[in-house]
Image (cartoon, rainbow over all chains, first blue to last red; front, side, top):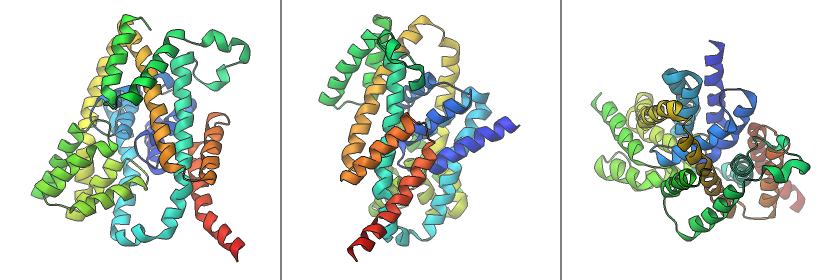
Length: 190
Length: 181
């Protein structure tokens, strides 16, 4: 029972503090992977791929996927409701004085530095994703200078550079790049 | 009661047909909510979207809550939100269940080995885009780098970083104001 409450509580916190939508939930999920053994960082990255390839908002998909791994269908529902709950309450409150909120200069002040901080946070989570994808380690603390080179995946790094060039040259939907990635992974046995 | 159901179904449909969330769903939202149902005006939707972006939570969910609450109060808000979430719940659970059974297959592992690299690329691109939009001066650049270091190296909880940056932003004009006086 306490485990279920924890699942709700943790996603409630994510819903309350992840501002900016989409990938904003990512740093929080990384923290969760650290704290509990519900899922690992590899699963988070897989989750992003699945979320990008299926309909629906990324944050909701991530909550459902994580919750499902924690405790089946009920887990998926508990985590998703937890994520959505705080924002529903906040939006209902804001609805009551919408115009005041829009024109309040303090709101803009808060976001002036909050936006770059969220960029930094997602950057840090992205750094974690790259560690998992290119170096086969789960966190920066698993790295040491001596063993660093031994960890590098050559195939992965080549694919990274190619994909970086392709995605910036052709603005196609992420699903296409994920599908191409899957095919390359199977053909070249990543 | 009929409109509550319509709220659920309409947002269900939008949720089922937008990939990736965020701005991808704006055109569909406009078509379904503004043109088809007349539940909100074009300007209202853009307002909801802007506020949804600067309040906690998923932008699409926040927008749905706004529209639902405007039409039918708290119950409407819950119905619209449940609608947005419903398709994802079903689809993701099916995929998760399937993956659980196939995760051990070599082909699946190879595929995800490369997909992880692609996800890394997508996030790098997203962060570069966010940097261009959010870092408008040197102070912002410093905050972004500090947030990165605190999170990646010192493993400080994102909650404290979000709260800290918000408070600093709130205090910044006051400090500047005090200096000019």
